[in-house]
Amino acid sequence: MRIKGRVVTPTRVIEDGEVRIEGDRIVAVGRNRSRTSESQWILPGFVDIHVHGGGGHSFTTGDPVAARAAARFHLQHGTTTMLASLVTAPIKEMRQSTVDLKPLVDDGTLEGLHYEGPYLSATRCGAQNPDHLRDPDPRELARLLDVGGVRMVTVAPELPRALPTIRMLVERGVIAAIGHTDATYEQTWAGIDAGATVGTHVCNGMRPVHHREPGPVVALLDAPNVVCEQIPDGVHLHDGMLRHAIHTAGPGRIALITDAIDAAGMSDGRYDLGGQAVRVEQGVARLVRDGAIAGSTLTMAAGLRRTVQSGVSIVDASRMASGTPATVLGRYDQLGSLAPGKRADLVLLDDKLTVTGVLRGGAPYLDERGVGGWLARAI
Image (tube, rainbow, N blue to C red; front, side, top):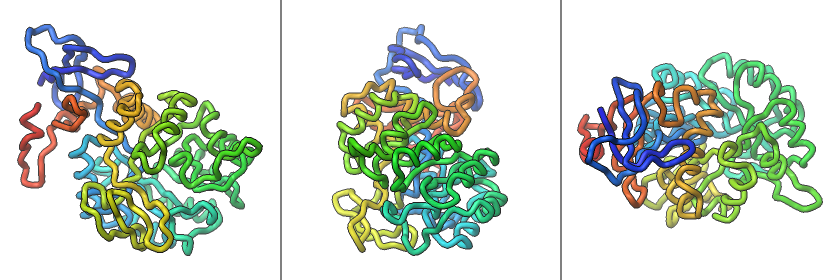
């Protein structure tokens, strides 16, 4: 299979380019030597390391049927690799959700699970349920990890036993992230020194920046070994803050995420996040109880589009939507860029950066009826 168009690589755009695929692998990337040309953009499949659901379906319930439907929704919008994020809940419920979703990790539907809680700051809990927050407990968490499938855990580093918990995660090969935190600059650096390598939706759910107390935002953006998640929906972050973060850390240390909930792709109305009522108005999700932003209704394609519209190059935006998060997962050898030998995960976009086609492992996206429709015809 040969796909022709403007090929986006980690460093440049190949005009009149071509990606050649055999089976589930990319075998060649370069100039299209034929006389035919296509105006479509060809990007690597998106990698979303922080997503709670979409298309009316949620990962947070632990229901494997709903989880498969949510994964399929995001696949339709170009996300070929994702972590399913679970929100704060009682430990027994989190364990059961892990057990129920692990088969989706085993069969490759999900790359893994992300625990966004329960070891978070009550002061910066955002849309996390405060009734179920708790101090970190390395032994308790280790028992959850024994189930398997967990790839990342977010921890507030200022909490009691947070640092040994982060060190235990690193020893177990699980990504330690810092988020939902009221930590000082120094406390954040202590978490980084303990082994944390990701900042969970940096700026959101964090002590704000002050010139006499820089707090976690400055520490995370400044740490050379930390990748900072950013939600590019214009709601969680002003476009100017997004550009500032990118200019500060560089595209190799910024991962675009959706933080999407089940309302992504759906109409305004009432939804649920971890047992809490959510109201979506004009595409913005907020908790009914206090108006806190409750995730997003974003897709990675829409996030990439807004990032480019804010003035970021499509090369850098693609890297932050694919390559950098693939690196976080330790999977850049297989995912995250268009290069020979890598899995053939591709997203095709038109001139308006709207998705027209998706391939995962060389196979075109098919709808629930097994029909490719307009997505497959674009290939």
